[in-house]
Length: 240
Ligand code: C5P
Image (cartoon, rainbow, N blue to C red; front, side, top):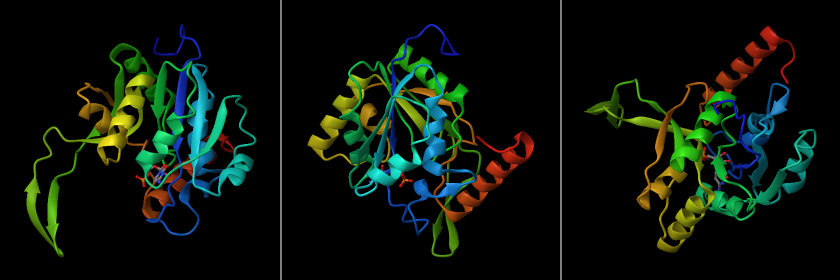
């Protein structure tokens, strides 16, 4: 099933894109142009070509519905839904969940700031959700980890068994809805959805991610993303 053959169109994707990108300054990064397309359109495009994807819910900041609609107008996909997000990523995902189709059997959550998620990795997450209910991409930490005190290094932290979480993270829809409901009720705050689901006692399956699927956070990340896009353009002709 790794190629998506044999399953109906039952995957919904939530793309939280309601951050104001304070670490990069200027226009929120998801609306900035990377090569030929905005960052957001690229991230949306990671999913819209997959035949098992029925719906992509893009969660945007207040006041950005119409410009996002214009940006995504050329996306050839009939299941695109835009909705307004909240003050935190967690709240934005919760708002996205409110408009996920009741026909979805798998829901993926993917950061708008990760435009290089591959089809293969997305499908690995979907397959694991079908088997295990919850799954996420992550990559093992390879560098030595050390705390810093002022401008000097302080103690070393063991990297043994430490992974960096990526997205997409995937879940059975009811499981994620319940996790967000309980988190909102209990006032739990977190930066990803795996955490909320684990707090409910669910196991989450680890799928090895890929370094190219990094989250664009700083101006240095943006520069790296531009180099990747330029390389792709040079080797394949104008990027799609
Ligand atoms: O800030 P950070 O890079 O962790 O954000 C991860 C993702 O969550 C981004 O795609 C961002 O647009 C989104 N986000 C959101 N609503 C917020 C804050 C962040 O949808 N209030």
